[in-house]
Length: 382
Figure 1 (spheres, helix red, strand yellow):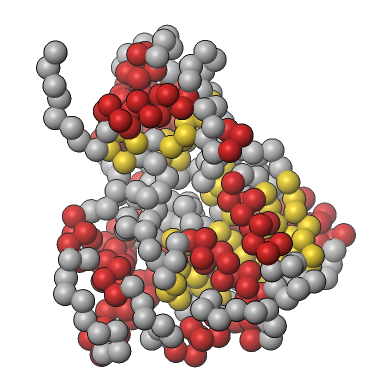
Figure 2 (cartoon, rainbow, N blue to C red):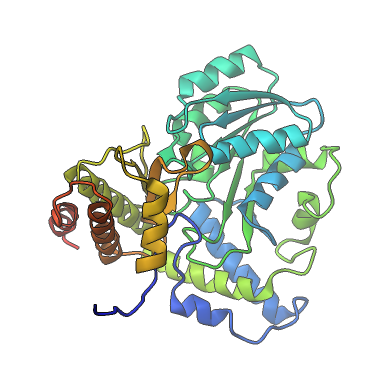
């Protein structure tokens, strides 16, 4: 039997593929972080982040993953006993609740079925019951399911009350429309290992003036993630930053700005439309009730072991999708179309899935999904 050359295709919703130009930035000599030369690089990176967040507010660099940025948001807004609302429709909405409880919030957790999304009406209902709520914590794109929440509409509701709106856009930023200032979002958090096309290691967070004022008066015990230190030192860093990762961030935002924020949204939307067309052609059911541009989650067909398909694709063919998490293990497959990807990455992923499903006994017409995706891309003129 012929042996194929092994190539790796990373199609999970984070980490995502890293372009060579960004990888090479990380190989440059490390310079001291308290120098004008370094500060110029960091300022360039942060100015680019403001554009990508669609904000005039400062964006702060954290030496952490996105979860560190989530903790920073809670730690600087919530005193013990403060009322908070969190939206739990998956693993990462669940994380908002866990962090709020760790900081002893009086938490009203909106628990939804995984795959579902929260409505603005539900947010209004909960705020009317608890008008003294201090903060609402929700997610742009729930990475565990592929569901997107209607953040723009939620923001309009929260504005009518005294609460601040905090959005986890760790996977959603750049793939899914988000306009921090225009929509009136108070805190946005993200990580660089997804839409930013970077290795993991930086969390990014931006606070509105209202949120920064709350942080000044927050009595929670915190030190490393005290945003007041970051604000006082900005655009410098209060602690030693991840210097070479900041080189990469500066290169990343340069490349992303060249594509434009609208171009990023359009590219990710087209890849999502093509992927879902392929899944429909393969008679596979989409799991998310409001699927977005980050990933497509599909229900694993009956009598097929989803965990075995994911591990086989990764270990035998080098194609890495993500399986389901927690109660969804083996029940869904998550196919990402996020970051440094094009139409041909999507087509390779769909082809691999067709072949693997066939190998595991699912009756799929080979080429049906690929054909459907190709048609979408050709009709779009790409």
